Every structure is written in structure tokens, then in C-alpha cells.
Image (cartoon, rainbow, N blue to C red; front, side):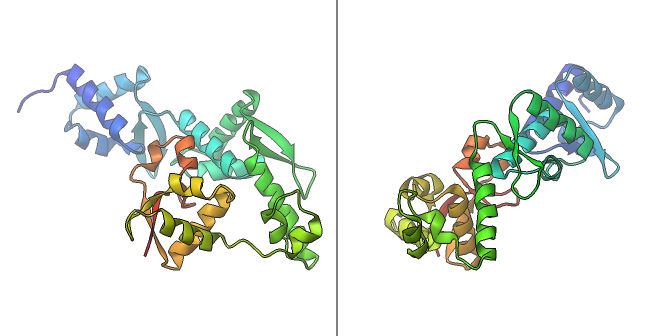
Length: 268
């Protein structure tokens, strides 16, 4: 059997972890580089010591390794969660930690504190208590959505329908906004896809769809598209590699709310 040089082995390890979509176990990594002896362990430890490969926390009795450090992955997860919703510190930590295999909440908490110190996150007043919500600086949409949700609940508790209040121009008098019909986001999506599809049944990219429906917020469009899929009225085309998408790219797609993202919509 041909012996792999130590340098070669190190490069194989780096290639394997870079191509991996998520942290991989020691055993899987050994299989990927086709090495089973102590030289593999030595090459891996060298790559870790040089910060070219990062050791992740053990999970379910297995060691994990990746080309992204747990801290960097935690930063991305925290900022992504903050983009989605305005949350208390504890809830933001939970939302980020659920997508970080083996990374304890305490470690994520350190990352959240660092992001606040770096002015990547800021505290804003909560709506139903004296507490604070953490939001991403320069991206107030999540806070606006949280505020809207709170106001809607208050309006409903008073026996009114709040939907029309938020779907019409703020320049209209309040009594007009409350008496106008609710916008049917799902119907707008179906109409838009039919007008944009080059041939019946051919998917329309989410980018074109968003440009065609500028008055629908991302949250409204995403929710309506997922509702149409549940009703089997549309097909949604899955992005094959969501883990490597930037947040900017994700904002152009339909968020499946479970780690999946969709790139196009087609009428069934």
C-alpha cells in the first residue's frame, strides 16, 4: 500500500473539512482522507494547533472538526437569529444554540456579549415588560416585526382586526385603513408567478418574485409561500447548500423556518 506523506495527509484533511457542510466526526474524517493510523491523528492535531482546522465540542461521545471555529459559527448563528426576530438575551442564545451541534449555551452567551461590545447588537426596550430585546444594529426590521406583533395582539384583545392597519399606506386616515380589505398575500404570489413564468410550470426565482411584489414584506411573502406549499398549490425549489449562504443571500430566498431555504416557486 502506498504511504501518504505527512504533508499530503494534512492537505487532504484541510480539503475534507472545507468541503464538509457541517462539523464532521473524527471517524468520518479519517474515512474521507482514507487514513486509519496514528499519522492521521498526528496530522489532524497539527492542523488544529495551527488553527487551520477547529475542534468542536464533543457531541454524543464523538469528536467533531471543521474549517470554521465554533465561535465564528456561533457569531453567524446569533446574527442570523437577530435578523429574524427581536429576542431577549436568553431567547437569542437558545435560538442560536439549537443550530450549533454540541456548543453549550454558556459559550454562545460569551459570543452574544462580545457582539454587544462590538456594537453589532444593541438592546432595545421590550414591549410587555421592563426587559430588553437584542436587535442587530443597522437592521431594525426584526424589532419592527416584534413591535407589530405586540400591537396586533393588543388590538385583537380589544376585539378589533388589526391586519388592514398594517397593510395600507400610513398616509391614509386610521378609519380608512381599518375598513379596507385585507391583502391576500397568497393570491398575490399565485398571480405573480403566473405572470412571470416563461412557460407554465417553470419555476420563478424568489429574486424576481420579490421584485414583482415590493409591497409584501419578506415575512409576509415567506409565510404565504410556505402556506401555499402546505396547501399543495405550489412547488418550492430547495437550495442545495444553505449552510454556506451569506445572510444577504438568505434574505433573497424563502426561509423554511427549519434551516432550509427555497430559491424558486412554481405553480402545481
